[in-house]
Length: 178
Ligand SMILES: NC(=O)c1ccc[n+]([C@@H]2O[C@H](COP(=O)([O-])OP(=O)(O)OC[C@H]3O[C@@H](n4cnc5c(N)ncnc54)[C@H](OP(=O)(O)O)[C@@H]3O)[C@@H](O)[C@H]2O)c1
Image (cartoon, rainbow, N blue to C red; front, top):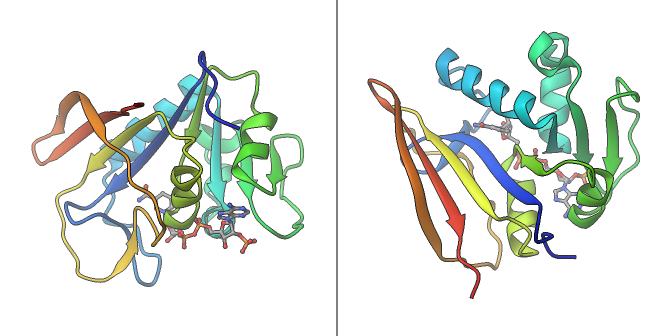
């Protein structure tokens, strides 16, 4: 399956300038409130998100789905295994990136919201159209990267640059299709 002509599949993620999305122990407390606000507005504007199983488990453990910003978002969790979700009305499991997109057919924009392992799965299958990278002002040397090791390469065109805070910049890229 490839991204349909009328649908946009967009990765939205907070990263460090060296491409990390979490510390080695999954710590993301370095992500600013302003960035969290931008992310939650983005998913609310589009009404959906796809996340990897590890990210899902962390969000549940931290009660993040109890936040009004995430509570009613149509969420698809990518996993190879059958797991019980906390809220079957809003949350479902998909066993492949293509199945995740099929489950979200009614949405004009599908939001791919991490983590790094799942982001790579979508990139490897050529399913990503756009990237929104919110670059937060911190660098650490080890952790989870925005893209796990995987065999893919894409060229990007820069759509927009937005300075959302004194020290925060959003890069919006579109994947070049040849
Ligand atoms: N900075 C940010 O904005 C941001 C955003 C999101 C997450 N994060 C952080 O990222 C970290 C988690 O990232 P991660 O890379 O460790 O894990 P992840 O991508 O959240 O989840 C990985 C899991 O997703 C499933 N998966 C991935 N590709 C799949 C495919 N093609 N088919 C079926 N299942 C697939 C697998 O689940 P199974 O093992 O069940 O097969 C895999 O183990 C956490 O620390 C989280 O806080 C940061």
